[in-house]
Length: 137
Image 1 (spheres, rainbow, N blue to C red):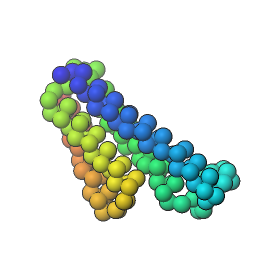
Image 2: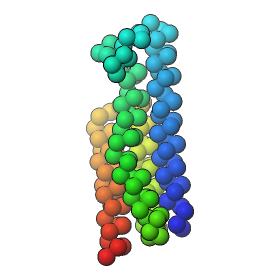
Image 3: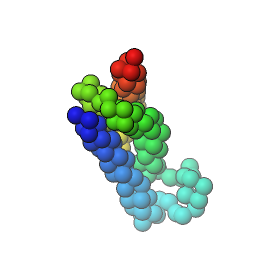
């Protein structure tokens, strides 16, 4: 049981690396099509960068912001030996929500759908934190 939470962490890291791969793929594709040039990325992304090229970068940033708290709480469960079925379930549900968020963001990008899944993922990570400290009491 204890090690199962590490697999959820690994899955989220894999998702992050997968999204990271889309950044150069979409940038090079746009460059070869003449939509962007090197100057468009000199200071981040210029206004000329098409949305389908900038979305993977934005999604990658999403996967390196709030998920830091996911990695921290999972490590807290693991290190203290408090991992239980609830923690593992919440961790995998969080990973699934983040994967769905990325899928929506990088495909049809409906803001309402994306926001809904994002909010759900936030409640799941809050649930992990609450579960940890409730177990500590």
